[in-house]
Length: 183
Image (cartoon, rainbow, N blue to C red; front, side, top):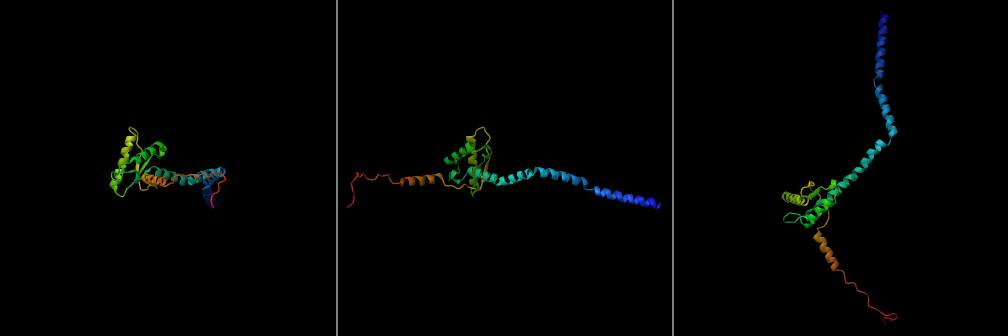
């Protein structure tokens, strides 16, 4: 009886040891299989992620560039009425005509006064409705970033003054060959 009990306990211990040795065996071979394929494909799975991460700042720069390009600043609105002036209408037409489809969003520079900002947004939407009848209108979004630049009237006045200050061209007086000047 002692012999049977000892054999039984030994078999039980051996069974527990073998079953615990099996724990993780399939996970180990799965990991070996995964690592084998990853090492054979290297560096492609990782270089794609790196390329995407390296390009991300450039995509942000392009988005910001289009935002500045498509922003209607304060110079594009009449100061009293907050309606688009002629330059603003031309800028709006230029955006609609030349911007690629994903970048046709119109940005309107916000004023400190919320009422002025609302009037500017309404003015742009009315102009869009006139320019694009029976067509879907692009988004009109307020922004706090105004593009750097000067009003066209100022640039024109500086250019006109610069041109008016240029002296008339004059040729030197004619001297015959062999004539000596001086004393």
